[in-house]
Image (cartoon, rainbow, N blue to C red):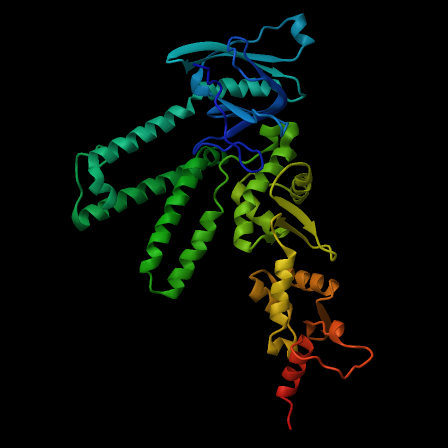
Length: 441
């Protein structure tokens, strides 16, 4: 049976690794080889990007044509990390990190030595230090313990307890029934929540260590709000819950790319993470959103790891060099937006044409606010679409002290040789009917 080591790693649409629920990135290096002479089927992994996380070592190919686009070595499989020896030869060669792994192959347990060859200019000493630190920390064991507790609690309580809210103790022996049981369970939940919040906000280090727990808590609160929407009768209460839900949705980047972890690859990795992040806001906004809005949403989701406007623009500009489904667009007026590559200007123009062809719009025109309500976007962006439609000859504008108003462009339907000729079933004929309908006789 062929060796199945190292296993493939799943990537996002922008080429970033899909992290496990509690996995956090720690260090990134470029131009790195992954070698293992003891495994005949070990793939040829040359000059890629290596990402060290709390759970894995992920190697990603820089070549889009590579069949081995990404692989991952679980830190749980590492048995030993060999200390590097200082010598005159090592001073003139690429730094190497050797470690031993165990894996199953052919029904048995095998071990082999894997070598990381660092050919880039990154700080390999920081990488090695964090490699040792994460391997000793064994963060994956905490996940296993949590999963074991969760599964044992579920099995002890039985199927009915899951459906009824889980009114069992953590040991699964004492059942809390009735109103008193519900109140006691709620009290315990809020006491644990309060304790977590107090610990998290003691200082910045504690806050960062509690990041995963806070995100999990936010998701639980969001689900609770969603489940309680159906029972709410007060409009103000529903609106308040929706605001809280929107705020909770902004808590979500557990492992933001930082200059400390990414080094020279900071803007490249930031660009890929941003491309993954903007997909949800773009879906909500209909395929286009302003750069300012994304800057606010992205920084809010990153927590304390804020980025500057220059970093954001540079990250967006790198999308031209990588294969991602989003792009940066700049209108003639200078307004910059982020849009999906599947976004269609023709579809927007068709909706604008339909809007300005309505009887009231034929007579009084439309404003940016009118278009914004129809398109479901901000008035500033709606104005850019209207100006684009004007540049393509779809609209004409009227500028007055009250602002801009846009009308359907009738000039292409007017015959210069016979100005009074009106063809039936044209927009020109519809406009004449709309204008003369309210004219006093």
